[in-house]
Image 1 (spheres, rainbow, N blue to C red):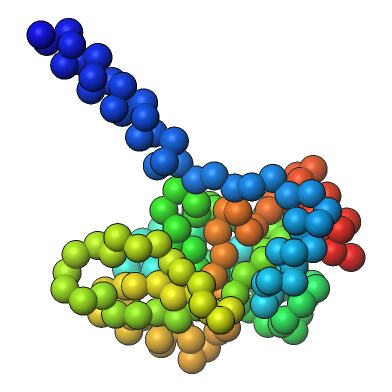
Image 2 (cartoon, rainbow, N blue to C red):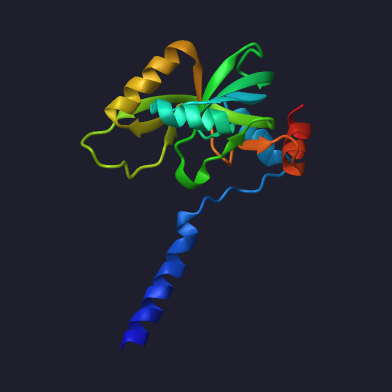
Length: 180
């Protein structure tokens, strides 16, 4: 009986695992152009500083030169923003978040973001969703206040690992060659 329960448990975990991981579609030239047309921003640049409502986390992660919610220095704009700008990139995509690193250059496709206050204290079950070109993300009240303050200083852009690429990678170079 224990062996049967163990087999059922392992089978259940094996069945669930693919649904927990991030899966990005491979893009061909047409897919890149569709993504380009559907994105409000297409920008190149690099990590500048980590953002976090927790100041200690922000300080440590900035010192380490890594982050998922970051300030991003734009060095080239293909679509949507001036190159003299610093933008705030947010992901909040769980497994689909990129760990941006100091010294690396990235190509980012993204959209405007709107933060909505969660009702109650539970973690939202819905992932970020896009309607009319704006990505909406449910966050706790303190998080909402933090991002509303940041939006006074920076353009806030939603992206994730399916929309951002290391420019030194072959895939990053392929995508950049299509959108020139």
